[in-house]
Image 1 (tube, one colour):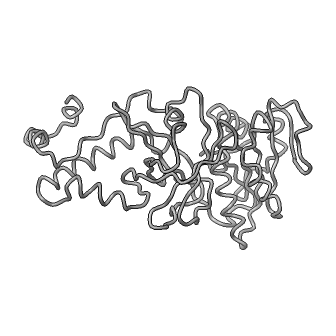
Image 2 (cartoon, rainbow, N blue to C red):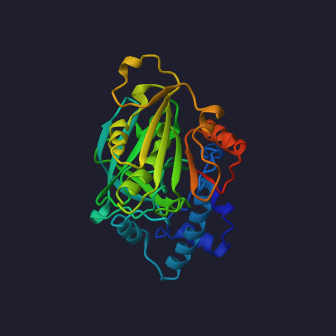
Image 3 (cartoon, rainbow, N blue to C red):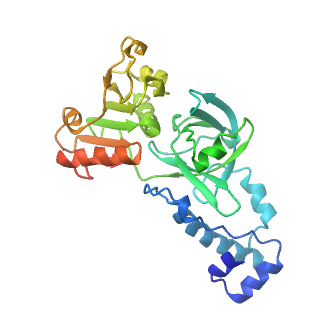
Amino acid sequence: MSSLIELSLPDEEYKLYLKNQNLPPPPERPLESDCCGQGCNPCVFDIYESDIVKWKKNCRHILSNQGDTVDDINRNHRHGAVTLDEFTPLQLISIRKITEHLIIYRFKMPNNKSIQMNPGQHLILGYKTNNSMLTRQYTPISSVDTIGYFDIFIKIYKDGKMSEKIHKWQVDDFALWRGPFGNFQYKANKYKNILMLAAGTGISPMIQIMRYVVDNENDDTCLRLILSVKYYEDLALKSDLDNFKQYWNVNIEYILSSETDVTKFKYGDKITLGRINYEFLKKLLHPPSNDFQVLVCGTKSFEKDMIKYLIQSGFTEENYYRF
């Protein structure tokens, strides 16, 4: 009951809520530990505040006979597509394990719709627990124009809260999705060159943007991807990335920080052993200008290092974007 009191509902509405079974339960406030601290847009607390506002409005509408009952809302919700306003249950239709911990999940879109998002935007995955709504953000790796489904590339972490839930998924299960979110705006030919710096599953927004560029025969933007992982086996989407290398305006290089067995490498692989440091990055950068942009996505430490190197090279937030 304390969560309801914290909402500061008028006494009359609060009493009606307790008596009226047609009203939906209030959103549960996330725990402080549910925030990953990586500056997600929106944060789990932003979503909660937005949900509280919508919940109050729905309650007032239902109480004044101006809105649907909870059953009506849930019935309509099940037939909708992914939206910004609320979580939508979507069916998992395939699971493709690349490695034990790197997995591609495919979700079915209702009514054979497309996801209707811009390149580089992401979705929010929600999982309702007893005390809160656990959320994480993921960028689909399928084309933004794909009809009927979308693919999500996820790394399963041993002690991850969401990973524990995801690892139990089976085909035909439903998961809650919401979005798309993100203020990245891609415009064809706005930049002559884009340098993409990615680590691990940070490849997701990059591969989505790459699909968008190569699918547009009128887009002459040159893309250079630098993907950093520990081992050769961690190049989970390598087959997809290798297909991009056939395009004249795509250049891809892999950085392996812990690999020692070079016999695994294949002909045509462009691989550097080590890490992306300031000296390495400086050789790749064009001078800061309106024709050149740098995109960064990876772990918190990776992004921090890359942005530090960019700033040392004279770049500002006008020249780079962190997902």
